[in-house]
Amino acid sequence: MSPTSRAAVTINDELAGLVADDHGLIELLRREGIYDAEHCLDDPQWIEWRGGRPHRYRAA
Image (cartoon, rainbow, N blue to C red):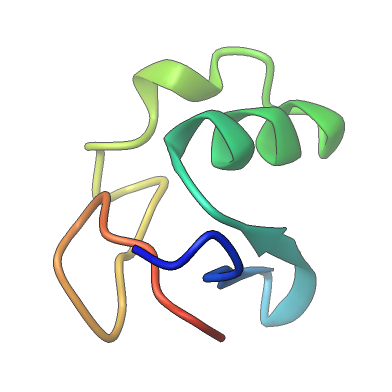
């Protein structure tokens, strides 16, 4: 992965931010009020991975 690769994260169809890894995604979700975010990453009711495999981040 390129150090500049980021994946776009949308919440309720609005851009919430760009992340480069799971840690960044967890931090973004916590800022959005999801405090148990690390337990949501593999739950399809919380996270829908689009455009690639889960936990793979590519340029947005």
